[in-house]
Image (cartoon, one colour):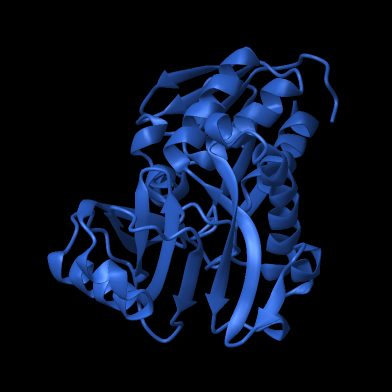
Amino acid sequence: MDSEPSAEVIVVGSGVAGLTTAVVLAEAGRRVRVWAREPAERTTSAVAGGLWWPYRIEPEPLVGAWAVASLAVYEELADRPEETGVRLVDGVHQGIRLDDLGAWAGRVAGLRAVPGGLAARLPVIDMPVHLAWLRERLGKAGAVVETREVTDLAAVPAPVVVNCTGLGARSLVPDPAVRPVRGQLVVVANPGITTWYTSADDTSGASTYFIPQPGGLLLGGTAEDDDWSLEPDPATAAAIVARCAAVRPELADARVLSHRVGLRPARPAVRLERRPLPDGRALVHNYGHGGAGITVAWGCAREAAELAVAAG
């Protein structure tokens, strides 16, 4: 990527896609501003479980490359977990076979078959810490984050505009192909579990997983299509705990610390492309990452930055 300073880029959106794209651009020498309706700690990214794995995201051939590129970055960041929020943690994906995965799986070191599933040592990202670290890295690169409500991408005053608005793209672009997939989590006091576990049920909106994080054990989960509710549902929370306790009985009596709800920005395929604005300026879209925005963040950010640089 060309590292010469050039035309300003405004990145719209402060979730993991927006901040990571802004970091790549700023560190390449671009003048960057991030416009965000709300701070990063209030985005969907902040409430994500944080386990690296391509989940509910298409198209798989492209997703694999983006995910593997991101994996390499997270493996490096895991050397500084207190600073970056990234750790490498062992765990098991129950009910998944190597044959079910794309070619990208061959690039995941240590991924292996075990009775009933796959075992791996994967990045687990403490999202509040990681988002704060991204903002700090962004500031060191000379970029700024501003609180701005954007209602018209064509009105954003920059030669190159990068749209990382996630679910907001549904109304902002507008793009009716973007829709919410609601995820609910329960955070409990960790009784001593040090590994992650997942078991997804593709036939329903329920799944079972637990992910150890510094602030507690995250229990999940749900994948409820077209549900816009951000309010935790008590019955759903109880069912999540019960499913996790069926795997690890000690969780039945774990103290509940908090409840989280996030709306994944689902789309039939990630939209990562450059389009002209009505006046000829460039608009780069980078949204629709479904349940894997963290998993593909760096791969997508680099591609979006290449498109922005080529336009600017």
